[in-house]
Amino acid sequence: MKIEKYTFGIGDRFAHQGMAQLQAILKVREAGIDVHPVWNKSNREHLIIKTSPDDVRAEADAAVAASGWTGAYYVDADHIGLKTVDAFIPASDFFTLDVADFTGKAAEVNAVEAFLKAASRYSGSLSIPGIDRPFHLTEETVRGAAGKFLLAVQEAGRIYRYLEERKGKEAFVTEVSVDETDTPQNPVELFLILAMISEERIPIQTIAPKFTGRFNKGVDYVGDLGQFAKEFDEDLSVIAFAVREFGLPESLKLSVHSGSDKFSIYPIINRLIKKHSAGLHVKTAGTTWLEEVIGLAESGGEGLALVKEVYAQANEHFAELAAPYSTVIDIDVTKLPDPQSVMGWSSAQYANALRHVESSPDYNPDLRQLLHVGFKVAAGMGKRFTEALRANEEIVGRNVTENLFDRHLQPIFA
Ligand SMILES: [Zn+2]
Image (tube, rainbow, N blue to C red; front, side):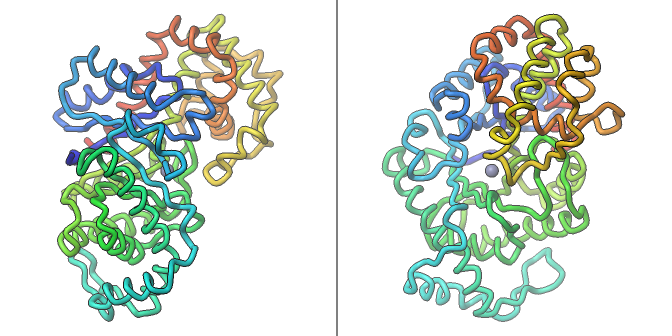
C-alpha cells in the first residue's frame, strides 16, 4: 500500500462531519489538486468520547459511499503503541507509531555500537543535495542521536512487526511520530532517525518530527518563521536523500501534526513542497469540532444556548480539561470571557469570538483553545449534543467545509 503524494488528516470527534469534510477535499480536487483523505483519531480521543476505532471506519466508509468518492482513502490509528494498538487493527490501514515516550532513554550498548558502525560511513563532512552547507557528523553527534532516539526506533520496529504479522506485509501505511517530545529535532537528527528506521527495516511512508516553534491546538503557529522555513526546507532535502541512500519507500514524506490553523506557515509549506516536488501529510482534528460549535452558535435558539453551556462548563473544569493537552495549549485565563457575560452573547458574538479569523477584533484565541479541549463537555452531553448537530446539519456542515477548504486545503496545497 503506497500512499499518495498529498494526504490530509481529517479528525472528527463526534463522527458526524465525514461528508462535510470530504466535500472540502472534493472541492480542492475539482480545482485540480489531488488530495486524499485520512480519517484520524487517537486512543486518547476515543477514551474521552467513548467511541471505538470501528466507528471511524464506519464513518469513513459511509461518507465515501454517499459522496461517490472513488480514490484511495485511509483510516489512521493515530498515536498508538503496543499497549493500545489491538483495538485499531481491524479498522485501520494507516498506523501512526508513537514512540515519543521511548525517546531520551538508553538502548542496549550492543545496539548503540551496531548503529555507530552502520552510520560510520557518514562521519565527517556530509553533503546533502539541496542543503548549501555540509553537515558535520562526529561520533559524538551519532552517539548523541542514538542516545535520544535508538530505543524509540527499536520500539517502532516492534510495533511494526507486530502489525505486519496481523495485517500482512505492505497491507498498511506506516507513520513514525516523535512529535510529542520536549525538544524539536533538527535536520541532522532527522537524518539519523531515518538511518535508524532503515536499520530496523520499517517501511516508513510518513514521519512526524517535532518542528521548531509551538504547534498549539487550534491556533496559529508561534515561533520564528525564518527558522521554521530553513529547517522545513532542509528536512525535505534530508528525506529525499534518505530515500535514495537507505532505500526507504519513495512515498516517504513529512507529516505535520496539530496541523490545523497554522496559517502563518502554510505559505512556507506550500512554497517548499512545490520547490522539492515533495509529498505532504497534514493532520487536523479539533478544528472541525470547533466549526460544529460555531455552526450551533450561528443557528441561534437551542443550538446557541447549548454551546453557551459548553463554554460555561469548560470554563468551570478548565484545569481538568487542559491537563492532557498541557504541552500543546497556552491559555491565558485572564483573557477568557466571564461565562456569565457569554450567556448574554448573540450568535454573531459567539461565532466571531471563536472563528479563527485573526483580523476580526472579536477573535479570542484563549477562548478558542479552551473550547478546543472542551469537547469532553459536549461528549458528556451525549445525545443532546449530537441531536443538535443533526438538527442543524446544514449550517454546521457549511462551516466545516468552508474552514477546511478556504483556510486549510487551499493555502497548503493549491
Ligand atoms: Zn501528533
